[in-house]
Length: 127
Image (cartoon, rainbow, N blue to C red):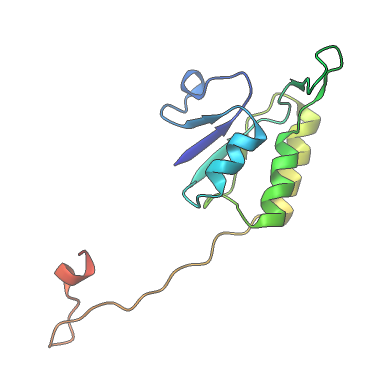
């Protein structure tokens, strides 16, 4: 699965056809917790939150906040996240965080099945 985090921009209109669109940090976290996210593209500014009082808006968590959460929980995508935010300061902050903290997931090694002659058993390998 590919994950697009942005409160306004539709991934299909920005060359990411078929990507799963998360408009909030909470939606992105649900997808990341599955362990099925391969690629992600992050926005920094995710609008306002109004909470219980619609007259007192506050900033919603940002793409940077999602990165901090991914680091704390280990719920990173399988590939290094990219950033598509138009906020130059926020973009740099996210990119720097990713550069310092993201690591590729560990490689899973499994035994390769062989036949009686020691050759790779292709039928067993892909069954």
